[in-house]
Amino acid sequence: MNYTIRKSVKSDMPQVLKLINELAEFEKEPDAVEVTLEDLENDGFGKNPAFKCFVAEIDNKVEGIALIYNRYSTWKGKIIHLEDLIVSKAKRGLGIGTALLDEVVKYGHNQGVKRINWEVIDWNEPAIKFYESKGANVMRDWDVVQLSETAIQNYISKLA
Image (tube, rainbow, N blue to C red; front, side, top):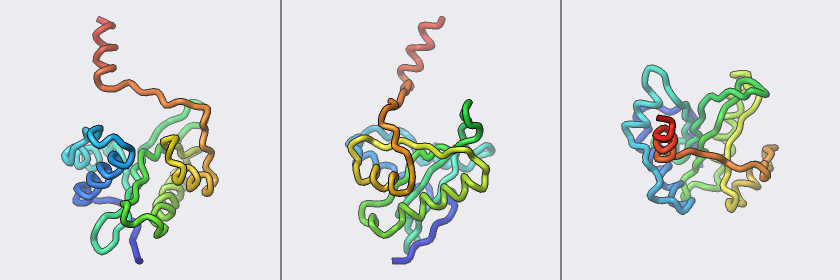
């Protein structure tokens, strides 16, 4: 099956959001997605885009995405964060994930970044094996730390 990897355009965002929701279901968090179509359109295609997205397209339908954004490491300098690499369940095994990761790595290389990093849920062994087969180091001794919107508000309220 032929597919095309390209930079996303604003009109791709409904299909991107569909894939985001598909991932949330796969990760057993179907109600966790708060981002809206309007958010994706504004945040990705406004005056100062918060992210870049590559899409895999088959027959005019987005079947995979790689969403990235710039970060800065105090140890390394410029890096890229791969927020999500998603391939629709129906199109897995066709090489789309590899093609999307290839595009991210080429982009990072062209930008001169020192590192590309991302997270993978610890029970997703197929993804872990995929990333390790590409030379990625899955650092199982690090924990992800987050403050939710509610936690941020609680934190701020204690500062006053």
